[in-house]
Amino acid sequence: MDCVMLSLRSKSVSFFFNQNEHICRWDCVFLASRSCTTYCTEPWSYYAIKWKTNEALSRPATSSSVYGGDSSLWGAHYATNGARSLISTEIFASQSEMSPWLKVQLIGLKMITFVRVYNRRDMVGERFHNVAVEVSPDESGNFVQRGFYKGPGLTDQVIEILCDYPTSGQYVRIRIIDGISYILNIAEIEIYSV
Image 1 (cartoon, rainbow, N blue to C red):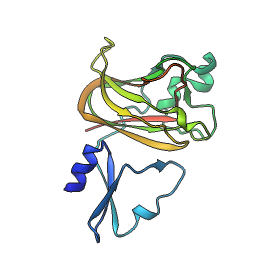
Image 2: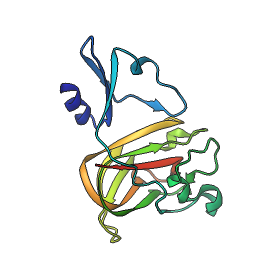
Image 3: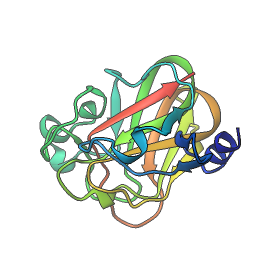
Image 4: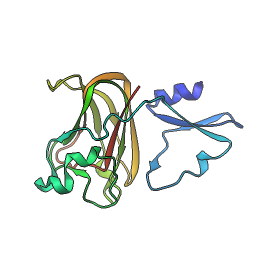
């Protein structure tokens, strides 16, 4: 039970527990293209918070801008299509701007627990930093920050951002909130509810 509390306190979605030595590890970095070795075998066990479904899959997404204005290469729809492109196109990419964002509209109000972001797989993973997870119950634009990732991210990293507590909302926005001019790149976003 101590591992669960420490994991939640550190805003971790998952943790590993060594049954022989009674120790736990959390805040692990996961790369999408790597297989799990050390912590995925006995005596280590993997635990994650309870989640129901990826509410973002195939849902409409909008953004503050699109890189080069070319939605066919870098449109917001690529972030929710269920595919993680290995190349620099067919991902979401914003223009270089202050506070770039990506917003996903869910089907009705959902109790959101965490957001999983698959960072760009080919390069410049460090662009994903100082990202807020913001939630709104409706189209009013009254977003409230419910999670944060300091970063910087790594190329091909799977980033899980736990909400401060389960939050009801229909719109989820991720936004770089610190800095002057940045590009937001996302291969895929998953939004999980309970």
